[in-house]
Image (cartoon, rainbow, N blue to C red; front, side, top):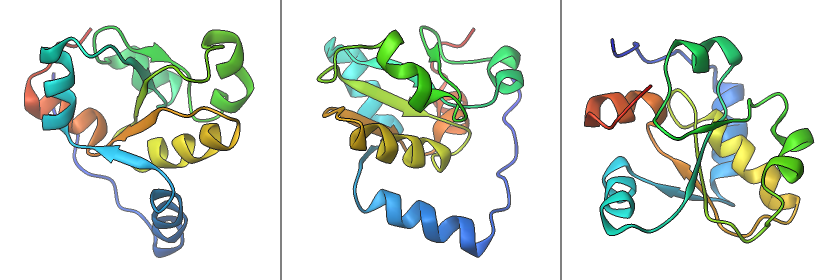
Length: 127
């Protein structure tokens, strides 16, 4: 799959992302790869738009888009202590989503820094 170019983000958007990142835990692609290799179970959640997910996604990822994750997560993943790794295109939307679902009571939420681009660059399995 082709690696998409990084998106341009406005200062106002980056400000709210930085605010969210102050309250969440992020992991690098190397840390995620170590989790996979060690068998440390985590549910991967793709928070990108429907069309982005349909074009390709990490193997095994559940799709809960940024626009609906807060509405649907309790039905899809009722265990609020489940280990969750959220990703988007580059790690910004996943940080915002992680912040919100933590406020909903989810206690083991990680955001993948670099997101889909990092997954592709690392050569991890995709569908």
